[in-house]
Figure 1 (spheres, rainbow, N blue to C red):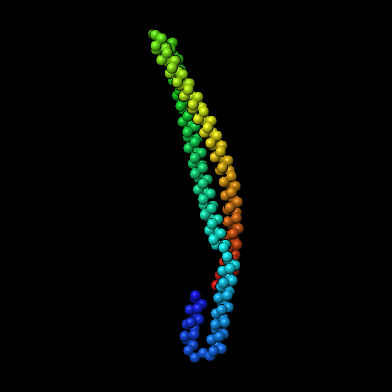
Figure 2: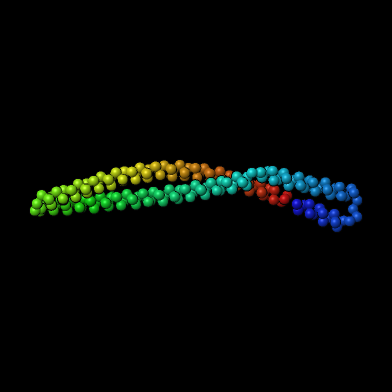
Length: 175
């Protein structure tokens, strides 16, 4: 488009040019247009490819951050369950001591039920901890795979950016 405008201005300034001069100028304009098209073809889909790779790398980094946050959250849950186990053990000890000083069987049975309840709480917490640890292992595997893919994509992106930069540097002067 710019070359067309330059040609039109050139022709307007040279009001009395011969047909031969006009044809030569038109031919030069066609050569310039052809060269610009060649330059654009050489670039091809590379800019889009680079943009897609940049987007994919960003997505992978975001995924990694989310997975790491998830692992931290699960670790926090494990700590909470361990604290619950400690509290339950302390309550069991307290109830066992109280059982030694009961006045009737109703109090004894009530304390026995509390001890049983705390034992169940401990079993449930231990089961949850095992599940959480399994989640952490699974997330760590996903993190590892994502790291590998991210590394591969980053090197691919670096390579493609290098190609694009080389082509741009090569063709910038001509454009």
